[in-house]
Image 1 (tube, rainbow, N blue to C red):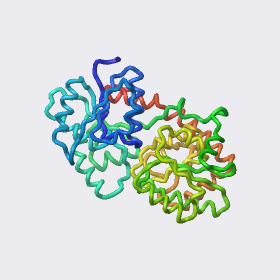
Image 2: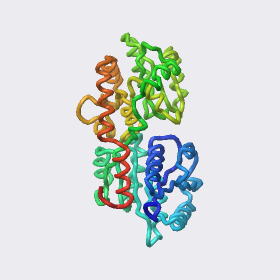
Image 3: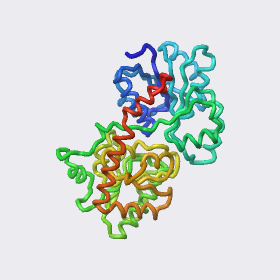
Length: 375
């Protein structure tokens, strides 16, 4: 081990989600580099548990009720017994428990909090953050997923006195890369029911209201009416999936839409796509799924929220549109239906990720934050 001190990532659960997957990935990467890593999670589900490296110590805390008064003591005991020097809290709820756990300790771990919400879904969520803000002000560092989120949060919640920094998500470009001829992208598409003459649109997102799958279905219908042959590939599960399936059936689009459910490895799904679309209307800060699609050499269309503009940068790296504006989405799809244009965007997207959003760059920023050193 590089150090005798351990670092803990604290999450609400190990469900399949962007924040959780990223935390598991960065934990696996850090332990492979010789760091002692612990992953604690308050509640089930623990779907991602099997994805965690065997050299990582996992701690299921078993929270009960709205606020379990036993959790802070459990955390304190774990920190002391395992010589934890830094705790990274993923999203506000774990941060609240870590704050109360650390209060009685004279020699407490370094407390770091990150959150992956830029635009809130409701006024209730905004009020919740006002309640969390005093807790965040007592942390040693706050990490934001985009520069836009950082500016908004620091101003809105008076967080300027806290060390705050931006760490953009990163992706392993040696894992997420364009398929070669031996991997048979054509075979993957055939298995998913995509015809040779169809442009495959796709999205990897949990079925939740803010992911706006309805906009994808509406856009697909409009593009088909313009004579462009398309197929929509949807990866994920969630509360709105049944309603979306019913909408597809009502519009007579069953032959044009494939629901793949949750995929442990999304690379085949991404390889089948000609155009990746993220239609989110809120929450999104710096989408891992979009980065993975770009790294796979796929043209992307994203809503202009969170750090999407930072992800795209200058040049033809992707197309942004206003959340909820289906006509803009349709226009973007039509533009990328031109093969030479789509291929140019796809190449540029891959180059952009390799140059700016590698997993190595992200990991170095995580290490500096956990160890309280400069890059």
